[in-house]
Amino acid sequence: MSRKIAVFRKEHFNAAHRLFNPVWEMEENDRVFGKCNNPNFHGHNYELIVKVTGEPDPQTGYVIDMKVLGDLIKENVLKQFDHKNLNLDTKYFRNINPTAENICFVIYDILREKIDPEFELQVRLYETERNFVEYPA
Amino acid sequence: MVYLTRVEHFNAAHKLYNPAWSKEKNDQVFGMCANENWHGHNYELYVTVKGIANTDTGFLYDAKKLSNIIQERITDKLDHKNLNMDVDFMTGQMCSTENLAVAIWQQLVPWLPREIQLHCIKLYETPRIFVEYFGD
Image (cartoon, rainbow over the protein chains, first blue to last red):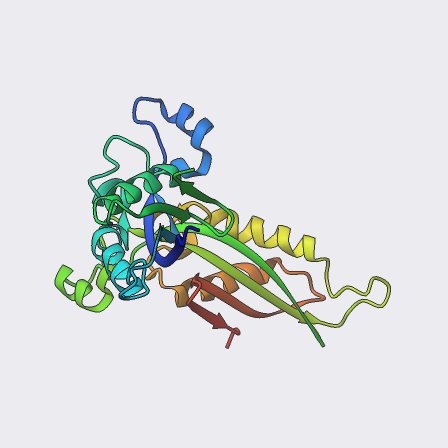
């Protein structure tokens, strides 16, 4: 029987963002993105849950050391996103909107490179307590 | 005396930056919060009023009406806004959670009906950081 188990690490960051499509007129952006199109930005407390699934190493009993996972997220994700403007201060959202969906894809791609390919990775991102996304779906 | 609390929420951008100081001093005092391009929060606002429950309704005040007042006078002006740039009652002030709580109290008091008194503004900036203001 498989002894695969999932481990989860929660982290958080605060950031400003704006949702708009630069190709569209202001009116069209207001119609589609509503208040999220405020040109002066708004912001959120993002909660991030990273799930790593695999079989524990028989020597340690760990899938992945949670402290190591926490440090990996802090170093590679939070350092770039915490207390930042996602549109202006990060390199990821020059050409795509910093929606929760796109932020989740970006975080997945950053972490996927850093975590052993033999483990499955899933990222859940809360933009508010009531709005959250998860990838892979 | 009975106390009634209504919880509302809003999302906003802000920065902590004193324009009278150098960039270095701002960075030293406010750290990451001084980021010139802003950052943001999901704020949770707890408004507590007090008074005597009405004998006919059993209510201190209709919680839905209290919510409407808070939304119209406070959260509609703050939600999805930049606190430093978009909010008339924060102009010229540091947009700390402390100052925002006091400003919310001042904005709200004139619109509350006579039968209730404002008791406390509790404002969460993050799930781990909040301030309380009792009007004194």
